[in-house]
Image (cartoon, rainbow, N blue to C red; front, side, top):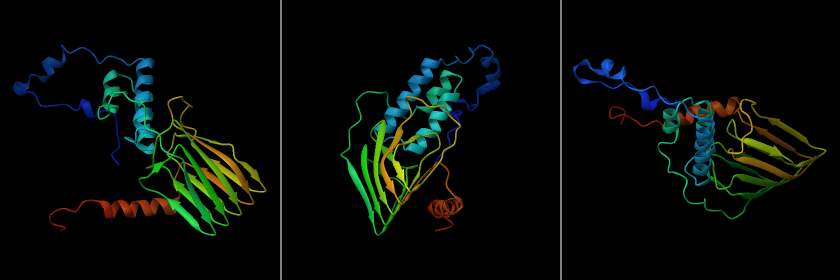
Length: 228
């Protein structure tokens, strides 16, 4: 995935007759962005995410850049490939995921419904939401885990609320505290019941996942003419 730096629009360009330095002296300084303009950019990113134009991982990355942007030009760079807010996002019907005496794993690019029921009975369920797309500001996961496990891997910066009751079960939540809560961030809310099981939520891949992703990226790189 391309890493956004927020400076793509400001790369120096060549100027004929060496007049660039003279012209720059007469250009006005870049206008600083206001808090309201940063909020509008964050809202545009949120709506683009709900429309499926951005994955949760891409939203998290651009949202952080928008919060740190100091000028209007930097904000325009972040959303230059996105349309202005126009129509409400389409809604997706509820879905269900079951792991009964089995294991279920979802990763890569996939669409997460606004309401999803997750059942893990004597089984395990692992959901990687980093490249997932959503269609609601609040995504509800209603879980029923019985002698099983549920693992959620989310992008850094996406808010997660775990309200599921844990009865004789383990619950571990490891989320980076690098950003403040915001009304413009998508929220993943986990409700339901976990009995004699475990629920784990984190926003950083473990060692084996990083190795697997590095190998996958290596094989996905396009080959040159000499390599074909």
